Length: 232
Image (cartoon, rainbow, N blue to C red; front, top):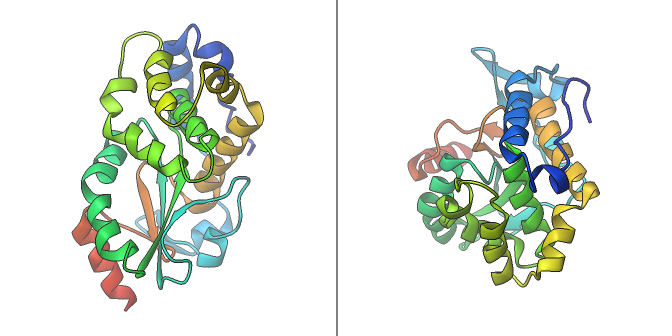
């Protein structure tokens, strides 16, 4: 990982006991991170903020395959960095994305890519489960978790029983659920995606969207449509 960013705490231990401590540490890590951004993130700035990154850099392969919907030949590519415990991310995926998908993704105009940017250990755990769900099941599980975010992300005590309920709907057993949440390599890969987004592309909040490399201001359907018009 990049110097200056500490690793996520081991989920196998912190999700069993002391979850609040783990979340506090992970949150402090996120808030205190101040790494030097690479030249790619400095290509376009406004008011000290990154506004655009090179598309070819943004689309370079990461440690995990991208989670993609839409035609690979679509003229517009949206890349979202999201945290599974982010309320604004849930709002986008439940209220905006269905229309965006129907009007633009399903019609071949837009390709949509979602990448992990967990803000805490619980978000990382949910992302791990989505990855472990297998081909064709990751995005549906993500959608289900966002739709019922209040049922698992903000419960008192150990959140694993609630997460397990959703995981079982995606075909997990108790054994495969526990195995997934103790997969250190998977956690490292997700952490790497997050670190690269922060270090290289200036991502510091969720959700963050790039439309053909240009950072989007706003998360409403009209914001995306304005961005699409500027690309035409």
